[in-house]
Image (cartoon, rainbow, N blue to C red; front, side, top):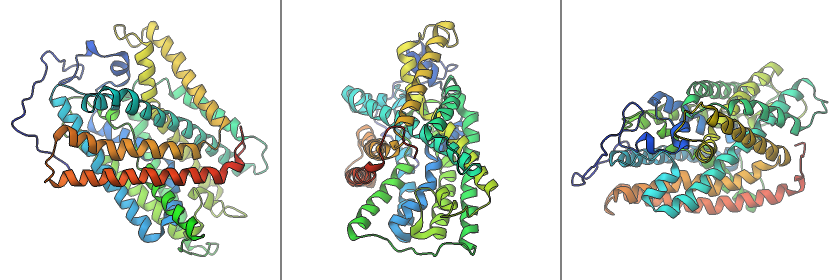
Length: 464
């Protein structure tokens, strides 16, 4: 739903004295903001910048697992779930944007997810539910991306030295070094150029995945194409649950309010344009990679299509092509990592910085440098110690991504605008809430089962 009708009988009161130059019309005076909001969530971006941020928060190398998800669902189920995921999340994020715009119009511009929950649902919701949940998701994403970055570096290493002795934790540490540097970017808005490059990179490796799938699918060495669902009846059932969960979490973001906070006022309509930029990339990449990969490998699709490209005994594609694809993935993972650090950076800045002093004063720079560096070191250590963190993150994702991106936007809209029960939008939102709640339950069961199956490979600093 692109627009909404605001009841004309509602009185709008916008505080006087808000400062246009600092970007807070209809919101708190900059002098009243804490350091996290003032320094990290600067409201200076355009809708193009918003589109770059949104794309980086959603489109990541995890999309290379979509052929595997489709192999668990089949052609009809996989295609329908891909389409539904795109439609529902676009609708959900647009609703969230409309609520934020309306709150800003009323003089309460909310810059953080927990601020929305506090003002709309009550203080306890922001402090004890949304805030901790978002932190777990975002910091967990930083750990997971650090792990993926290390695995990508190891993949590149083994391309040229198949018998190499270096361990995964060493590559994770190398990627952590890159993150340590990028983590010092001062604000979310400062990432706009990095995220533009990220957008180009995700198109690049998706094009590589598409081209590689078509080449392999038409080659003499192509695996036999079998699109049937494999395994026992129980395995197929849990496979369907797992496939739905993978697709749902792949569309997740979890930082929509923080991205909208980077927009310079007036914000009305800008987020919708940014979402259109983002979803033009989402649809192009998700459908091309998911469908072409499943067409090429069928029910033999691996956890990531890059594993399929390596073949059983030898690579199915030239080494230079695999190297190029992995470099694109590696660089984009670094952008995704630093974007998901922003909620953590905002919390650290709020606790440690002084909003009354300049952002780049010694008083604020030294604590920022130390705190962000420690945050990266902790994330890198967790990734190195727990290389099976992907299984843990799948469980966290089910309990975090689905509530934040599929359920809460509908609740916020229904509470903020109070649509009549006779209106179509009320029932659409209610149906999405109900279906998403079921998804949380089945996704949790599937994730726990997968953890139980993989438990035999769990040990600290495993070279997976």
